[in-house]
Amino acid sequence: MVDVSVVVAPSPVLHTPGAVAGAPGSPDAAVAWHYGDPFGEQKAAAQRVAVVDRSHRSVARITGAERLSWLHTITSQHIAALPDGHSAENLDLDLNGRVLHHFVLTDLDGTVWLDTEAERGADLLSFLQKMVFWADAKPEAAPDYAVLSLLGPRVATLLDALGVEALPEVYAAVALPGGGFLRRMPWPSADSFDLVVPRAELTTWWTKLTQAGAEPAGMWAFEALRVAELRPRIGVDTDERTIPHEARWIGGVDEHGAVHLNKGCYRGQETVARVHNLGKPPRNLVLLHLDGSADERPAVGDDVTAGGRTVGRLGTVVDHYELGPIALALIKRSVPAGTELVVGSMAAAIDPDSIPADDVVQAGRAAVDRLRGR
Image (cartoon, rainbow, N blue to C red; front, side, top):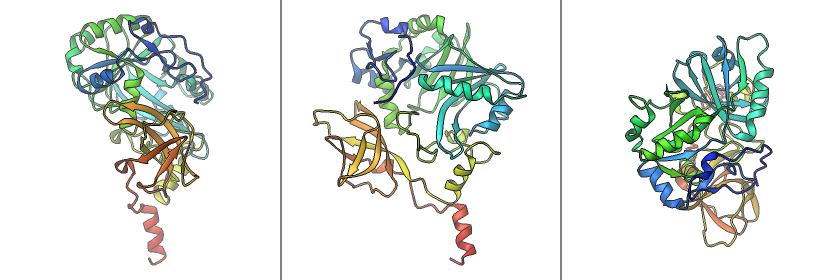
């Protein structure tokens, strides 16, 4: 089980007819897991347009003239010159390059907005506040704002309800009338948008969007699409040993990643550079197809075994409307796609298309080989 140490108040959207809250103790206990038709909600999110309550996300903001240049120096993303109205994904790493926090940021009208998992928000904010020193940057919690997500190819039909003239491009953002903003994300599907809105207006926005045609969908739908797209969730699909390369977070803003490889020094950069230039990650994040006939489902953090030997760690497990039971897992790089795996009492198989290409020789390794006359 995932350890959720932060208690989040139930969302007011849980009063929506048919809403079923996430399992007690889970990261999504404060919002709806589904509204009575889990697979129908997934289809709506994939084929039409659905709205998902993600108001349990922790939101913070940073003001000050040096907010971007300062944040650039202590995190993994290249954001010193991020244009107004643009977003990025970012990581906070420890000294050994292991991932401590993953967050999404948007700079708009003189403020950087951050959102992350509820149970990690306080620790991330504490780290940022401790690192300010003399910079003109002021990080502070923003519990008065909340996140909703719109998913599906028909989001454009909601322009009037959103009050914007056009949808933003990927990682771009536009202000919303009455406060907050709309940003486009590259996941959990090709047509994904987040609204960061005043929390006091959360129910108003939900009602406005559903009346305009957005179908209510729970976190089950969001998670199913996310897992199918191999997008990890910090603390669920990662553990205390995870480095960015294992979780597919390498790549700058244009590459839809959270680690930019062409920027100055930051904590953990040495590991990032060494693995990128000379080595390979010890594990890969892969998609597992699970045998749905087992009576008991495995849990996040369970061992993945092959021939009785532990070869990986299980992450999110979810039922997908087309793929059936699937999961994300961190598996040792040496394990081939055809290996028969077991998780708990359930058989599992790696989706071969989810294994990253491993035949590229890194620039640093090629240079070493040339020096050695290979």
